[in-house]
Length: 148
Image (cartoon, rainbow, N blue to C red):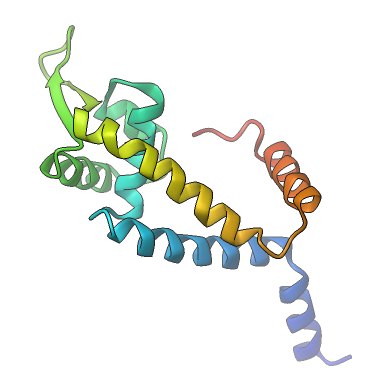
């Protein structure tokens, strides 16, 4: 077998390559659906973190993502301008702010949860229910210990 053919087979059999391509496809689908709400994927990630954890500082949000500080700031600024989150005074630090979901942000949460469910359903539509559940379990096992 020649080198080109072997390189192609190696790439196409690579789990990492497949996951990376799938992640890009999911990012594109998420960005398209989030645009309906005036959001992007980075804003969505920050919003979901605030919804999950309640009040967090910008530094705490930043530690949860592999995004540069300016990207976190930009996402928070956009969410604040959209009225979905608010910066509130930190109880013990004059230099920090607590980031919390507003009433509008909390009202949007069910639509965001449904959006994720729909994207996941689209992703697994060609799998049987048992295979989709098995995929979730395998990915969950693989992700154990991964911070977020």
